[in-house]
Image (cartoon, rainbow, N blue to C red; front, side):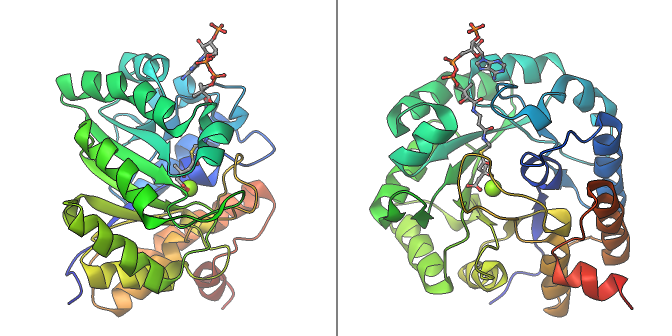
Length: 299
Ligand code: HMG
Ligand code: MG
């Protein structure tokens, strides 16, 4: 059985932009977020409070967040790797944060300069302090399927870190296929293993990158398993600067096309969303890789 409604966790302004070489002006980012909200998206990841040298594109988090934080009816999660990041986010009134762990040692080192367990130890006080203040915490887990340095990732390794993130108090998890190598059978096997380890499906979201064109098929497999939170990036923007071979996220337009075709509600106006991605593509001087954006804008 498929769900009646899916909550889209829009990551275009964060995952989508973090890898862009040329600095996107803060006011354009704010407009992007406002337009996404106007298209009906209700969870819009806004930016990251990470070290500015690690992700220069998001170094304007202090300037950007106040421009969008009062958007009505929209949750604006921000990435926070450590207590320094949490302090910065709290100072601006953020009400939702996301920590980001790795299932593999190679990516933990590349992305966080830590081992997997050192990174978990870094998140522990962040999550504890956030929970004290009733702040919603998402726990991302990267490299859930394959890793560019280590190859296929054993399911038990993924389950262990998921459990650790939930046990420290994360409200939801997002299972990341950072480099887009997952296939639907692998998705269902991981979801089943997580359930067996006591992780309820309603705490799980999925986060697919579309490198091998599998993101929609993988999403459908997750929906069939009962997942109702799906991450996507407007226009298919994206990629991770610390994972070679990571290309764009699943495009929100492609996702919405499939969901609406299945009769699943999203609250998203596909026309407005497509117009937003066409507008953003013009700013980035590059056409959107989303097939749906192309189909709807080249009539
Ligand atoms: P580090 O070099 O080990 O940092 O980096 P440190 O803890 O040793 O601190 C060094 C200096 O950085 C200190 O300053 C800190 O204050 C400062 P000093 O005392 O030397 O003057 N510092 C900070 N400054 C501002 N904001 C902060 C902050 N933290 C420390 N938050 C660190 C460790 C975690 C900071 C670094 O590795 C980092 O920022 N990494 C972020 C990488 C990132 O954002 N990657 C992309 C997001 S993950 C992703 O895209 C995957 C996802 O989409 C899911 C998927 O697809 O799989 C989520
Ligand atoms: Mg990602």
